[in-house]
Length: 71
Image (cartoon, rainbow, N blue to C red; front, side, top):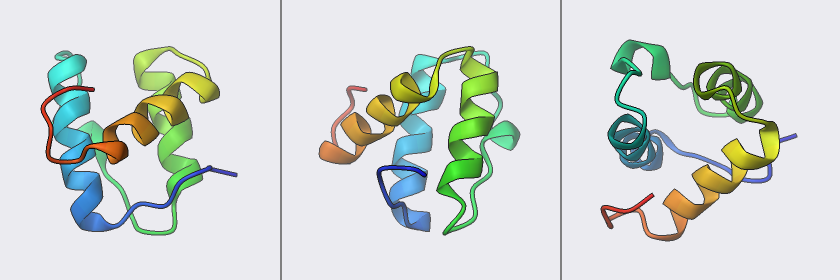
């Protein structure tokens, strides 16, 4: 189970940060439905080829400063 909760608005900010960090990802690949955090983590794990801990850490780091530019 994901250790964070996203809304549509917060996901848009996190998605921008992921697209900046992983330039080979397409915006289409990063779809999200509220309440589907686990599916999002699984999807990102495959796309960035990293483990669950890394993906969740990265998302939580982005959520800590949603208006900042750094991920």
